[in-house]
Structure formats: C-alpha cells, structure tokens
Length: 99
Image: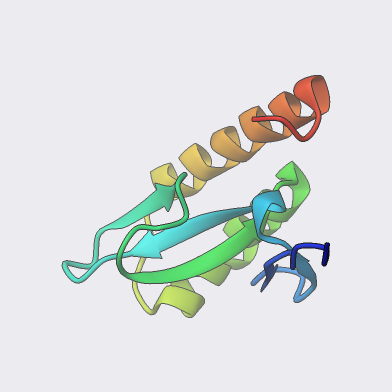
C-alpha cells in the first residue's frame, strides 16, 4: 500500500514548510473578523503559524498577521493566539501526536 501524503503548509513567520497538523490557522472572514481556526476548515483567507510560543511572540512583535491578512489586528488577539499556541504546544508534549 502506498504511504499517505502529508499536507504541508508554510509558516508566515519563519517561511518554513511544516506538516499542517503542526501549525495553527488564523482566518479572516468576509466581514474582516479574525479568529483562530482550530478545525482548519473555516471559510476565509488563512495564514499559518507554527506551534511554538517564540514564533507566535515574533508574529506579535513584527505584526506579521496584519501584513499577511491585510487588516489591523488587536493586541488582545495576538495575546489570545500566544496563549492558544502555548496550550497546544504543552498538549502536544504531554500526549504526543494523538489529539
């Protein structure tokens, strides 16, 4: 049997390619609302951030999502993103690849 293809996506902060499950998707919908897309299937323009707190903090410091998604994003959203990435990173370290 042929091995399954692993979907790869590009991290907007580092520019590196990672497996999709190792990234967090941030999505902007038609009404310019920005949210964290835990499912990876929400409608709208998406950008991927690596599951690393330092990458999320770098995105906040350089305001990379503002440039990528083309809108002004609040500091509260970046703080929520950092907390979410920290939680997901800790969860991955505890439980491994199983979700």
